Amino acid sequence: MNSSVTTKPSPSDVHHMRAALALARRGLGNAWPNPAVGCILVAPPEAGGHVVGRGWTQPGGRPHAETEALRRAGARAVGATAYLSLEPCCHHGETPPCAEALVAAGIRRALVALVDPDPRVAGAGISGLEAAGIEVVSGVCDDEARIVNEGYILRETAARPLITLKLASSLDGRIAARSGDSRWITGAPARAAAHALRASFDAVVIGSGTALADDPRLTCRLPGMEERSPVRIVLDGRLRLPPDCHLVAEARRFPTWLVTIAGYAAERTRVYRDAGLEVIESPATDGSPDLTFTVREFADRGLTRVLVEGGGTLAASFLRAGLVDRVAWFRAPRMIGGDGVAAAGPIGIERVGDAPRFVRTFLAGIEPDVVEHYRHET
Ligand SMILES: NC(=O)c1ccc[n+]([C@@H]2O[C@H](COP(=O)([O-])OP(=O)(O)OC[C@H]3O[C@@H](n4cnc5c(N)ncnc54)[C@H](OP(=O)(O)O)[C@@H]3O)[C@@H](O)[C@H]2O)c1
Image (cartoon, rainbow, N blue to C red; front, side, top):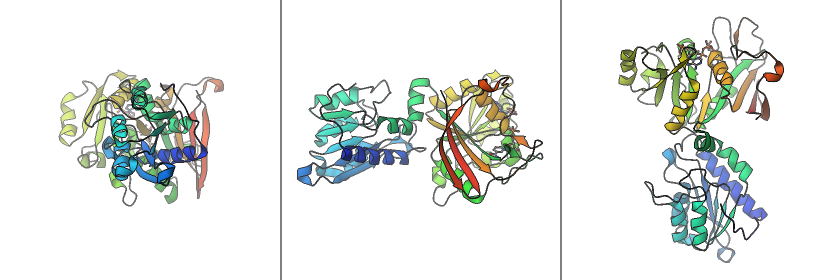
């Protein structure tokens, strides 16, 4: 970790770092398996002090943010200050390390929000800059950067992605009527917001019950954003997913994974593989794919941020397993009643004090509905 902080960040440093973090957010949902990073290059005062390069991690994780910003800045990077939402990489992968590129471009100062938890970096990117005589200030806006990178950090440190449970319920916490009909509980503006939310996730997960009841597409259907659709994942222990459903039919266009129980009707998985789905075989727990195993498989495949979109049985399993980090709740001004489908099935809580608790981080009206975001209280 950097030990030679020589200058405190100024208000303008914080301003530029926040801009770098805003650029980083653009990559959420499409930079995986790499972290979503933002980079701003600012010319030295004698050269005008203007922003000369901006970059963020491109789809699929490459080019990196620094490469993009340096390309835009060209010779104007000489003497510049770099604002980096994450420590630059220093290992030789498919592209040369960004720390070396920043040194070669002649930057004079670097502000870094967070040390990269990837053991191949872990402070070595910062040391590389310092060894080349660049002044480095680290930890600038680190709390904000941690929120942007929380999925990537969890994958590196806990071998699983960040998991957000998203549901749309009535005021009395029902996600469907007694017949299973759930279209539509919320209004069009809330549904558009839910599609935009999908674009910031690497993958969307549902249970087979929802796949059978709703035949959903799980894509991001906002104008111009279909290509931002996440990987679609169905947890289907008994291979009940109909071969003619939307998820199977469109699997070659939108990546689709199916998680089932290892060895269960193995010959039938061929139908799905032939249609272009990736099949993940999990050990069973209580007769269903094991969630701890499943989320580790997600991390192994590079996912950093996963949105669990129900239904109630799957939501309960994730809650029981202690695997809900964030909640995105859309609430409609309707009452469906106790014979409707509960937002979460049984989770076996005996005492209120034992129920998982969440802290609200966001609240907004999306007429006529309300959206709330929560984080798990640890
Ligand atoms: N309003 C909303 O936001 C919303 C969102 C989604 C769904 N819905 C509604 O909810 C209803 C469906 O909910 P549901 O509870 O019946 O089904 P679900 O939660 O979508 O799916 C449950 C099924 O998923 C499979 N599964 C695989 N792995 C699992 C695991 N580890 N834990 C739990 N389940 C696992 C199980 O079937 P196998 O044993 O066959 O694997 C299980 O029966 C529909 O009416 C739908 O319209 C509403």
